[in-house]
Each structure stands twice: as C-alpha cells, then as structure tokens.
Image (cartoon, rainbow, N blue to C red; front, side):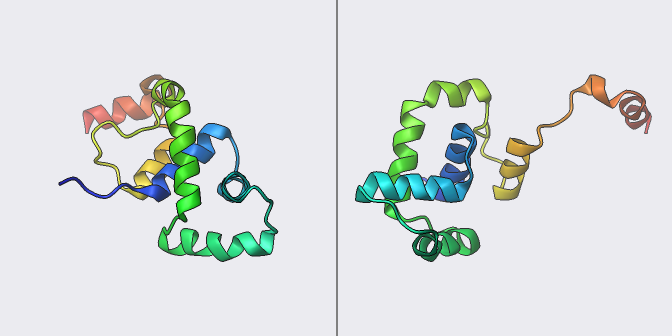
Amino acid sequence: MGSPPDHAEDVLVTASLLDITEFELFSMAYRAWHCDSASERHLERYFAPYMFQGRVPVWVQQFTRQVLSERGEEIAALDVVPQSGCLGDLGFAMRLFFPPPSPRSLGPLRFTAMLA
C-alpha cells in the first residue's frame, strides 16, 4: 500500500500554478465549496492548522484535486512535481521557488568545484 497523499504539497503546487498565495487558495476553495465568501478571520481558523501542522481541510483538498486534474499538462510542462519522490517538503518548496542555477551561470565556481 502506498503512502498517503501529501495534501499540503498539493496546496503549494496549486497556489504556484495559479500564481496566488496559499491563503487566497483557501479563500477560493471555501467559496467553491460553500458557495459563499468567508472573512479573513474565519479562514484563519482553517489556515493556521495548515501552516503549523500541514492539516488541509477537505474542501481545500477537493479544490486542489480539481485544479490539478484540469491543469495537469501545465504541471508537467513546468516540471514542478518531484520526479523520484526523494525531495522532502522543504526541498520541494525550495525547488519550486528557487530552481537550481544552470551550469553556465556558475562560471568559475563550477570549474573550481570540479577540481576539488
């Protein structure tokens, strides 16, 4: 049996794909699920457990699943999904926001590292 899905990672990928903050994603998901807008204070009740414990409400999980399934080709084109599954949460987030530099951009540093 496989490992459970990482819903927090889905939130990160979906927010990145839509070019919005995670809090804005929660707001959109709430509106889609409840057919009503929520105040910031009300959303904070759900957002805080996500930020500190990685707990994602079911309505956010559903929203991210829907977006990711509809925009799957874009995700593959962006290469934001770890290929081997060896990156942890921090490594995955770092890869999303700070892609590794190309070997050309490293210049003399790359050459020095190769000699060492």
